[in-house]
Image (tube, rainbow, N blue to C red; front, side, top):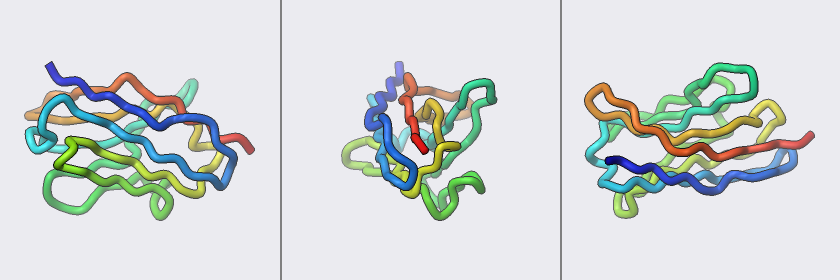
Length: 115
């Protein structure tokens, strides 16, 4: 059983910053890829950022230059640093891990950006 525990969401004003954390219950080296998705009310879940064990990160166009995904392998934790937040970034953010075609999800963390 894989557990992904998220933390770091909250309410912030436009232009502010937040950092989301996702702690895995097993070594993140065991996953092919880890990333972050988000789902706003009435919208489909969408990829925000993802990073495989090797290679460059992949970002949604809407967050490029503002968000940064990083991994701390020693802590089995993945982070999403979010800067210059906009009201349209408001959503529930989900940590995701992929292994051999199977998706694992965190419980979701609410991020609300006020204008």
